[in-house]
Structures are given as C-alpha cells and as structure tokens.
Length: 251
Image (cartoon, rainbow, N blue to C red; front, side, top):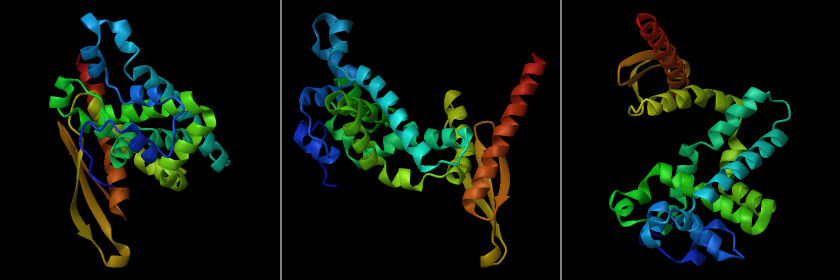
C-alpha cells in the first residue's frame, strides 16, 4: 500500500480501501474523528456538541455489530463446536489486537482527525485508538448501508482470519491472550517469550520456552515453539493465580 500523508482528508480514497461507497459520507467523516479533535472545534468545550462530532457512539455501534456478524459466521461455519469453543474463536477475532492490526494494514491512522495534543503524542499509531476507529468505521457502514453492507465489509477485511479460525487455533491462542490481558489490566508490560533450548533430531524436536513478566518467569516444553509458548502461558497464569491466593491469605 502506498504511503499517504498523515491527516489525509481524501475520504473517497478511504472508501476505496474500505470497498464501500457511502450514501452519507458525513458518517465516515465522523467515524474518523477523535474526541480530541471535536473538543478543540466546539465553542466553549460543549460536551454535547462534541459528542455529535466524534466517533465514540459509532464505535459502540460497530462493536455490537462486529460481535453479531462474527458470531453468526462462526456458528454457521462450525456447526459441531461447543459454546465455549465458539466463544474463544470469537474473542480472538474481535480482540483489540486483531482490530488494530487490520486498521494498520489499511492505513486507517492516516485518515484520523486528531486534536493537537493527541497528534503530538503519536495518536495515529496508538493501537487502542486504531481498534476503536475500526469499530467506528464499521458502525458508520452499518448506519449507512445496513446489515448486509456491514457483513460484506467484515468478510472483506477479516477474510483470511475467518477462513483460518478453528477451535484448535483459538485454544492455542487463549492462554497467551489471557496472560497478556491480565498483565495489561495490572498495568504491566507484555510478557516476553524466548526459546532457551532446542533438543532432539529435526523430526522429533522439543522446544524449551521461557515466558517472563514483571515479577516472575516460567519454562515449558512443546513439540513446536507455539505449543511450548501456550504451555508456558498456562503455567504463568497458574503461578500468578497461586501468588494472588498467597497474598490474600497473608492479608
């Protein structure tokens, strides 16, 4: 994808990336408008007036629509899976990490309308902000063209992700996702995974992986690096849980 300048206001170009042409382009304009821009533009900082300009309501709409579309697709494509398996698959697909990556791939950050302060602090590259904007764009498409248009957009953007989604993949990713989310909730940096040793011949390789985080580390083994990382994340969560129980007992 060609490089575009930050603050690109060519919404027609964005429509081409989205593969959707708006009847009411003001919805798309609102979808890429951050609250920081809106508050700078309204008279005397009116919260009510700013809400009519920024994208947070559309983000709310997009989050709900995305969940419904992905859940429906997974249900129809995986008729023999359990509720828990479907839930894990959906969680992985609609996660902030997935949405931020898709937003980065489409260059969505370059079209954002940001306030001066948010611009200076690198708002265009903030993954949480990008994920929120992706949902707002989906919400705008839903409001403009209805459920079919929103579904077409999700299939267009998530194509490979939806095709490769499986209970096995979701289960493998789940422990790593849970560990990262727990550390984020506690305001710690993301866990670090390192292959510390490899044993065995090529056809029977065993990988030793260490996951470290602020406050601890554990090691695990697996026949692939990914399976070793998954087991390490599982053990880390168990160790952190035991640590929390010990702290509660001490209190």
